[in-house]
Image (cartoon, rainbow over all chains, first blue to last red; front, side):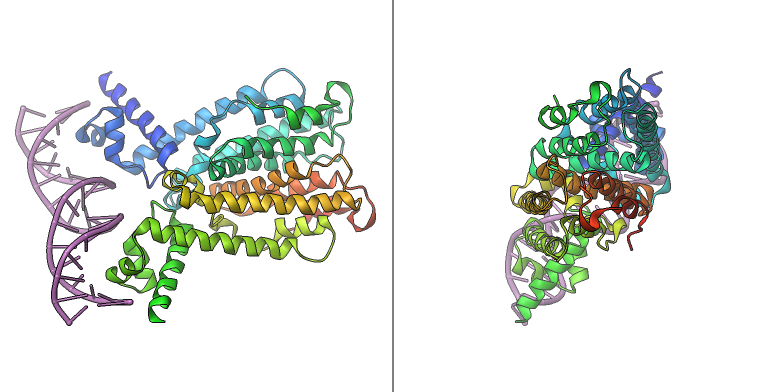
Amino acid sequence: MSGTDTARKLIEATQELLWERGYVGTSPRAIQQRAGAGQGSMYHHFGGKPDLARAAVRRSAEELRTLADAELAREGSARARVAGYLRREREVLRGCRLGGLAQDPDVVADPELRAPLSQTFAWLRTRLAEVLEEGRGNGEFGPALDPAGVAAAIVAVVQGGYVLARSAGAPEPFHEATDGLLALLDAHATGTGATAGAVTGAVTGAAS
Amino acid sequence: MSGTDTARKLIEATQELLWERGYVGTSPRAIQQRAGAGQGSMYHHFGGKPDLARAAVRRSAEELRTLADAELAREGSARARVAGYLRREREVLRGCRLGGLAQDPDVVADPELRAPLSQTFAWLRTRLAEVLEEGRGNGEFGPALDPAGVAAAIVAVVQGGYVLARSAGAPEPFHEATDGLLALLDAHATGTGATAGAVTGAVTGAAS
DNA sequence: GTCTATAGACAGATAGAC
DNA sequence: GTCTATCTGTCTATAGAC
């Protein structure tokens, strides 16, 4: 039990450090210190830095899917669920726990390390496309809306929003980008039901 | 002259390495080797790694602005110029020479290193907003279009497109995201002039 | 399971000769 | 301006005692 607990602590410490400092920027030494574990302990439970990183990335991918699905599986209109996803509370300046890793050449070069990123973003795009398709089916959106294309744009705008915010040193660009996209999406709204007037709400509403 | 030439080579080598491997992943040693310069030479011209990186990032920012403005200052409709910017030839899997650096904590922590990112993205958003505003003024786009918001979304989708492409190990997600955004923008087109039918072109047209 | 010792390679920079 | 030598610390991992 103590061993399993140590392994879990090591994975969690690695998750945090990968998020904060990336793969190159994360050393076994730093992991051990944050986990409160020694050298021997770490190398007993894991084969080394790549092995530990793979376990950490898989876990972060699960967490991300859980967080996203919590918004997308809610009750309510398709438009509201997409808006809920775009505006869910985020520590914007921390960036995306997965997306940030895509910048690292050592991550994209390792198939096992890259796979969780690839799969998670593919899943997210499919999940968003389903919601948009549903909205098109029930008349929330016009028939011209392309669910797959818009889903890709939504995921990209979130990832790029993080980049702009970190570059600016402030969260505003993230919200301006996501609200800008939401306003474009609302131009497809047919105006049936509660969706009307959503454009104004999208632009002025501040995400908490 | 030989000294100036060496300094230039060092800066160019640093630009390449920052793009490929990021700030943490770039060592003085690697810079010297790529530039064909020795230790003493590098430390004669520059104060160290941060100093050299600042010069390299400033130069990369200039290059990026030049490339973007080449598309946005063309002749043609606002819609065509935005589409030209989104579809200009890119080595998608290399990512953005500036945006990728925003992931690095050492970059965002150094004001001099972060400033070129911040300023360049701010300039790009303003420049795109001007083009969109022009398109709204001449009736290409409807009056409901929000230039600033859409401009932020465009820049974010490009940055996020890089993230999705590198995560997938393939350029397609980048083009799906940018084409998806372009299709949404076309929903604002008033249909006057050559803009009509642009939606189909946006979705099916493959960027070289 | 966890600890300490050890090791070769590299990071990042300084010093002084030429 | 450029070169070589040198230095302290860290990276990542292995070995073997406990």
